[in-house]
Image 1 (cartoon, rainbow, N blue to C red):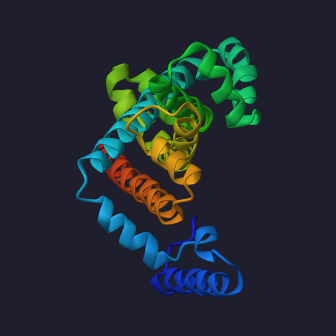
Image 2 (image 1 turned 180 degrees about the vertical axis):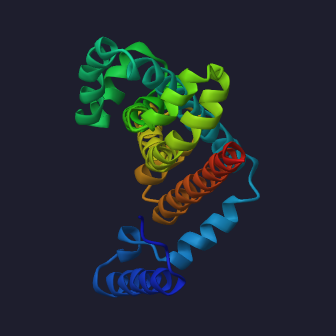
Length: 251
């Protein structure tokens, strides 16, 4: 189980960050360019919030990255359901899943730029990174579904829809939930990296690249904080929806 974020621990690391920034500023000329303080990053974020361009970038990146997550989750669940009873399909999918797990995301981003325009890149890359953990976890959950319950369902000729809702869903959801939690973090990291390389206009990745080019360190940290907050918010909302579905299935 993942460790919880404690306020005292977060505050301690923020103080260490602030101290490091002040020490670097005192020790090195233009030290503020190397490490902006959390105060500077927070103030810069507050300056960005009223800007329409800020919300346009957040909306564009969120739609593409979370869209890639949803599309990939849907495809992964469907293929896992098909592969669970078809060993040949599982064997067929094993090589590409292994490749996606092992190959660095930067390689996929550069290769995908040959086929896709910059606007579609983050949707494709985020979806690509999401597929292996969701597919593999759902497949494992289906394998571990209680065989006795399935046998009873066959004996009593329970319709497939009721089997899915009453047997498969409660037992597979914990595996899916765990995979989704991991995949949501992966898709935001991969999607932001794709935007930094592809530079689609009006996105968070474009703002990160601009901050790096012009040595706007507070902007760099502010936009990074935006990515962290968005990833945390989407994870909380999506997992809450999954928990609600699990509760409904359990009744």
